[in-house]
Amino acid sequence: MNNQYKKGVVELCILSLLSRGDSYGYDVSDILTRHMDLSEGAVYPILRKLKDDGLVSTYLSEASGGPPRKYYTLTKTGRQVYEIEKKDWLEFARTIEKILEGDEYGPNHISQ
Image 1: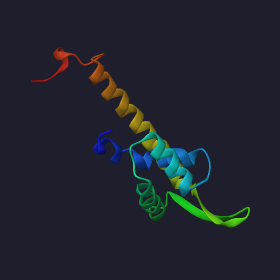
Image 2: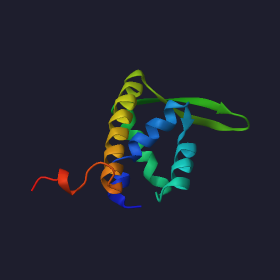
Image 3: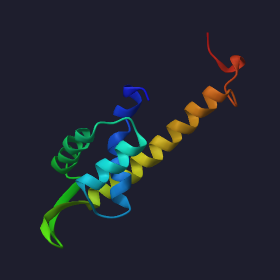
Image 4: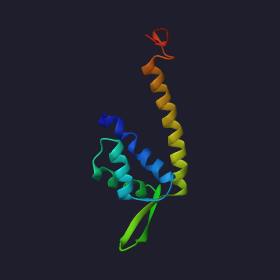
C-alpha cells in the first residue's frame, strides 16, 4: 500500500480500535501490522501523540504473572474526534470510489 495513503488513516484506525474497547499498545500494533504494511514501532509514537493531544489516556493494569500493562482508552474528546473523523473519512472514501469506478463522475462532469 502507498505510504501516503497510510499516513492519513493510521491515527483514525487506532481511534477506531480503541473505540471498541481499551487495549494495550502491543495489541493495537499487532492488529495494524497484520492488516497494513506498517512497522511494529510505528504505532507507539502515534499513541503518544494521541495522548499528548488529549484523545487517549492510559492506565496500568496488573497482568497475571507478569508486570502491569499500560492500557490505552479513548477520552470523551477522543470519542468525539473519532466520530467526526470517521464520518469525514467514509464520505471521502465513497467519493474516491465513485471517481475511480466511474459510477458518477464521467467526462461530462469534469470542468475544463
